[in-house]
Image 1 (cartoon, rainbow, N blue to C red):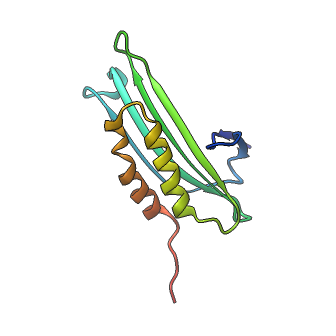
Image 2: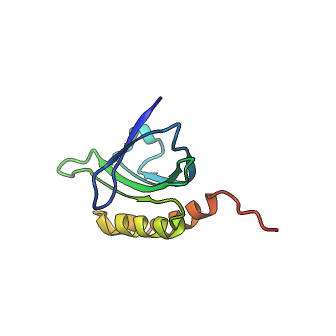
Length: 131
């Protein structure tokens, strides 16, 4: 049993059992200077994930990180998330959580990635069967 703590927006974090809350959709990106990540001086990472419990509740959360080795510069991270009740609007939550984290970023250039991540995460949701 693997536990994970997830930061939510405007409420305390939640702790979950990852096996009971599998990831059903996600989108990630990263950027770094140089040719090799392990030798980079600056690394930015973006991620949005949707986890859903068997009972139908869902958690949508996003993380952003900017790490730097440049002298005098500092790293930055942000986390936002939402806990949805059974039947909650997952697509609206993806949009809201990503908009909230884009506003929290220290570099507005990095915030431009979130619309693409929103679209990619929505496209990664489970397929809807039509009759």
